[in-house]
Length: 336
Image (cartoon, rainbow, N blue to C red; front, side, top):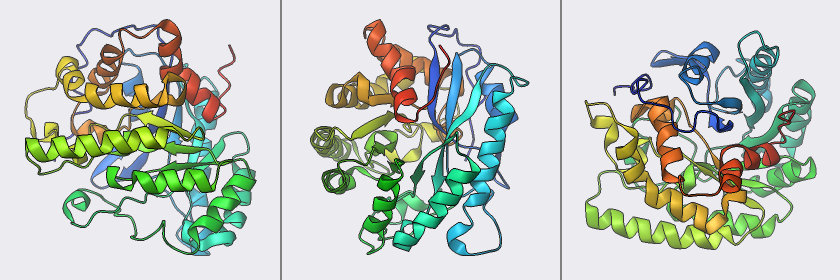
């Protein structure tokens, strides 16, 4: 599948001075795709004012030996080192990986506490939470393009909730990656753990792959209903992004012509506006989800699309959406 991350760099940058904390991106070096700090900073240098970013796990650079529970510490060490490099100022003004969301296999239950303590010791100034992808679907359709399909049944595993208690006890957050039909499960978790900050990834991914227009309309209606219900839980915040992945059914990943921001904005607007209406700007944060969203569009058009969608928001709302919510949730001090 063609990757389009470099397309659209000739677009004028909308609101070039607006500070952005990219609330969700990845770094890894795999046979199918390399995306490391130099690649991310090259995207940042294209013009949008990315002042800091949140590194989110992809099972990258895990240790290859030792107890399975502790192998994710390799990724924490990697991301923390990248964060230190960026913080030095030697690579520009963007504080990439200023916060880290690490991987943990939450099926280990209370034993996860040992991993968390070690991870916090390795990255005391950057570790902010944990993610384990928990997407479930009755068909294999959405898993075909994933390099690391997640295990099934994580959220019903007997170890899952004890592991979340370990997160909550340490003041860490849980990044939830689910499809739209699983949103009620996240609402139940939010009720069970009212002191645990839960961050919904990718607007709750309305799964519309290989569906017709009528089916996708039904999915949108169900997603909208369940997202609004989830938003009633004040301990849940929402990441706005991930719309470049094939799950949504837009089909942009199959296009051979460059995607401009206006076309992206037209397709993404109903989802972004619904989420902001449900959660409020103060509980929403913008993400690039790069490089996965690069399947559909370039870095410049992606951020232009997001800015265009919310162009009528107030300055205060834009500040919340593009940097303040992420700074608060992930405890990033911008030094201003």
